[in-house]
Structures are given as C-alpha cells and as structure tokens.
Length: 336
Image 1 (tube, rainbow, N blue to C red):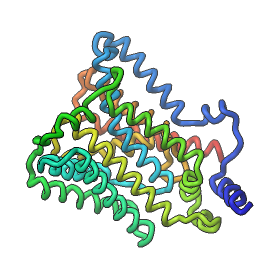
Image 2 (image 1 turned 120 degrees about the horizontal axis):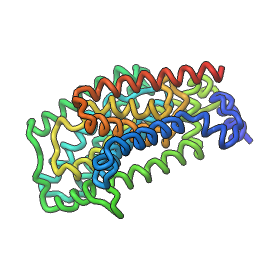
Image 3 (image 1 turned 30 degrees about the horizontal axis):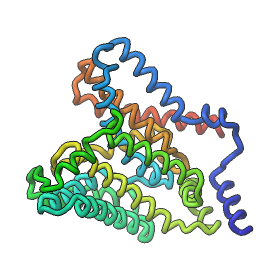
Image 4 (image 1 turned 120 degrees about the vertical axis):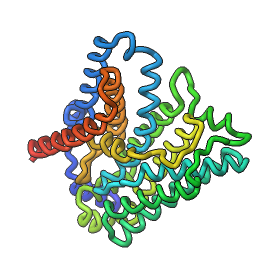
C-alpha cells in the first residue's frame, strides 16, 4: 500500500494524465520529428536519387547516427532529471585512449573494453557525486570534467595516435566495424539499448523516480524518492553510454586519438532536445533520442550532398536546438 501511495504521489508530481494511445502519439514531439525526418528523406530521394537513396549511403547514415544515438540515450536520462552533461565528448576520448593503450600492450579485448567502461564509470561517479551529494551545478561540474577528461586523454596518449591493437585487433574491428544482415553492429546495439532504456523509463520504479526528480525535486524528496542516489546513477548511465559509443567507434575507425568526441556534446544534446527532452527536466523518451539522432545525421548528409560547406553544420545544429526548445515552449503554453 505504501508503495502504491508513493507511485500515486509521484504521478501527481509529474502531472501524468490518462491519454489514449493516439493522443499520446500526437502529443509527442518525437512523432512530429519523425514526420520531418521522413519528409527530408523523400525530398532528398527525389533530388538525389542516385546518391541519397543508395544502400551504401543509408548504411553510412545509420552507422554514423548510431554513435550519437547511444550517447543521446544516456543524455536523455540526465536531462529528464533536470541536469545536463557537457563532458560526454571528452569521456568518449579518454575511454578510447585507455582501451587503445590496453590493446596496444597486448592484452585481450575483454580487458581493454572493461578498462574503457571502468573509465567511463569513474567519470560518471565523479560527476554524479559532485552534483547530487555536494550540490554543485551540473553545468560547472561537467564543464570541468570536459576539460579534465580531454587533458587526461592527451597526457595518456602522449598526443599520439594509437593504431596497433595487438593480437585481438581483428575482434575489435569486427565488433565496431562489422555488420549483421547488412546492418552495422552499432545500429543493432542502438536499437537494443533504445528498447531497454524505453522499458526502464516507462515500466520501472527507477524510471518513475527519474521523471519525478525532473518534475519537482523537492516534492520527489517528500514522497521518499532517493533523489541523490538516483541523480548519481543518472550521470553514471550517461557516462557509460558515452563509453560504449567510444568502444564501438574504436573498432570502426581502427584507431584511437585523443581528439575523439570533440564537439559531440553539442550533437548529443541537440539530438536529445530535438527528440522531445525538456532541458528544464521532467520530459524525454528513448525513442525521441533515437529519432533526434537520425534527423541530425540525415540533415548533415543532405547538406553535404547539396554542396553546403561542412563548416555550416554547427549553425544548422544550433538552429535546430533553438527551434526544438521553442516548439517545447509553445506546446507547454498550450498545455497550460
């Protein structure tokens, strides 16, 4: 009874209301973003039939957005709590260097991947502990981690590229650069992680706690939600997602450089927000992160095919972030 009362109170906090399936879909930003994504694909297929709608190009698009999509799943969890993680790009870089060094030393890929995941875990623990238990701003803490992790990557690598992966090199290449049934391995992993994240957010107490904290942290504390622990775990999940993406890129590229992940934080946050996550907290979906990542990569690919200078990509991504936040603000006013 106490558990049911707590769940009911959390539902009150998050403002959840009974809606039909169609109402929920139509109210979802991810749905409208998916329609925009479909429209862009149709237009580009018409304009570039021999370039855009080819098997090779679709393979490259899906593989490229898979890395950002995996990271966006972790970022979605953090943003739902009302936080943000600016360090994911640098965490990706230091994880790749650590795993690359272990491989270069002749150790197995299992040990290398374990060391990479442990590095991501430590970064997430530091971020989460300082934010949840010390009370520092997520922006300041993760900005500091951005600098620290990137510096560590440079120091550990001695500013050199690592490309000798030792006896397990073929296994590492197969994991990140291989494919199953014509679909790149990172895409399969993204699909699985999206399903798992969606299930956790929608059907577990942990997911309800995440939404409760983002909806109203003070009220969540009053209902008995272990706010500090859940927030720490959210940042650990985000860092681990960046670590997983890093290890997949390691196999795909066949090398590790300390600049890996530079600028990814902007793309990951953009994908998350475009997919419907609210930067103020309390809203976000795993499917939205998936679709938002796909939209950014399709736009990037379309711009390149249209002959637009690659240096303009940042401007377009920034504009889409502003548009997504503006759309959420308009939808919020309508709900009020």
